Image (cartoon, rainbow, N blue to C red):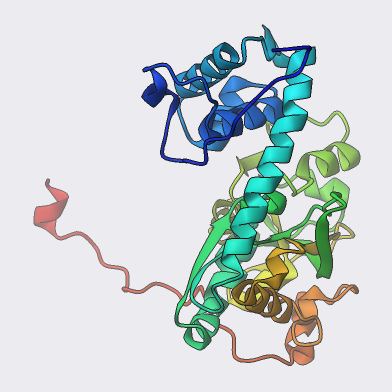
Length: 361
């Protein structure tokens, strides 16, 4: 540090790690800068390690080496994690400028490749697994040279930092530099399998629902915890919630197999699972957002991906994405799109009993 300002040179070599610098380099490399940025944003070395998909020890070594090279402490450590020092805050500002320049160069490079290369789409687990992936074949046949990298997770991707070219999410992005398109709205309704109803019956009211078994997904973007606390303040989950998961597919299978009553978006009913909508006044609606960087939209192959995403959520074709709620039983009459894939066509093999010899094993 000289006169309170950090002097840094960026080594644009992503393959170099801090271990490679044991010979005495005094210049921070991109891995160290990237690690510093993630640690500052996450407020924790361990959380930064999870985001970067490296070990805790690697993050600590990179931060220690960066502090040694800059000759100053960037973080103070306490039981809650790490906090930026005054020098760390100033370094963060400079590092963010470097990051923006780096990603700007990457976007400029990508614009030179029209329809040959990789497109990265981030989306929630349910949209990716049950809606977009089954529809992807037509897009790929029309664009055979594109590699589609679809990241399905409940944590929203950062499109400004090229975690994805585009992101389909339920949380409205707030960053002024992010372009945002409202694609439509989903409506989540209570549903149960016929096998569940055969055993437990159908609840007629919220009070009646408390005598039943629930299957719920608690994850980022779902709002389940807030909704539960709003409608059932002080009611313990034990003894009522039979199944809890952070995974959309696990929740759907739990509902289909009769574990309990769970909330499912109405578009899922068009995919063919044996689920019965339960007519309670407990419908929860969520806007669906498309987020992307304006520069990324200038890349022809990314623009083609964006057009495909918009078409896939067109409420004129797909009534379950309209603003108004349409009961699952009425969706077929409103549907105006192509044939849909039934993802739940039943058992691939008939049930078979073990032979006496196999049973004895």
